[in-house]
Amino acid sequence: MSEPTKLLRFPEVQARVGYTRVHIDRLERDDKFPKRVQIGTRAVAWVESEIEDWLRRKMDSREQVATKNKEIGRSLAEARARASAKTRAEGQIDATP
Image (tube, rainbow, N blue to C red):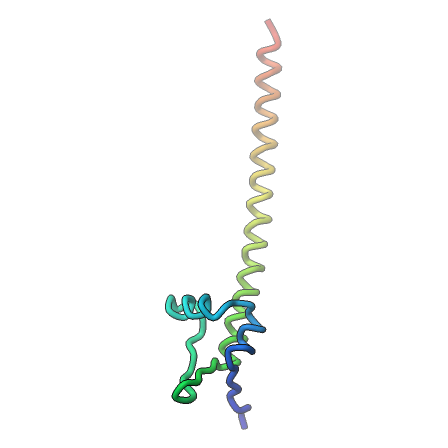
């Protein structure tokens, strides 16, 4: 038997993601955040598993960004080393009469 779906009200969602209501509204409108569920005339909630999946994707993307940044850093360091070697080589050529 599967676990029952747990719904989170706004204070719980805000505590987990750290965003304001306005920011969450904006993200939902742009399809960048899980959609709320109308649970009453004036009450909404979010499906906990969808919030957890969203957070997991954010954490996964953080790892991908860190890996890309390392690769970019290595490429920049190699390019600087080549430029420095080229400058030194050109300086040696220019130093001779």
